[in-house]
Length: 71
Image (cartoon, rainbow, N blue to C red):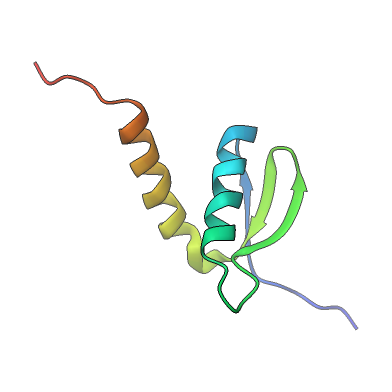
């Protein structure tokens, strides 16, 4: 019997992938986390319910990394 898992395929550079894996490890309590499968160096298959959370975390990281002066 085939087991289907609903998720989202993410493509990102290796640094962002490591950040996502770090978030997954931080948020893993008694459950297995939101990363369903680590496919290769630039692809992850993740739970679809976590996409907005990941976008927020990546936006926060981007803002912290690239602070621009207002003119």
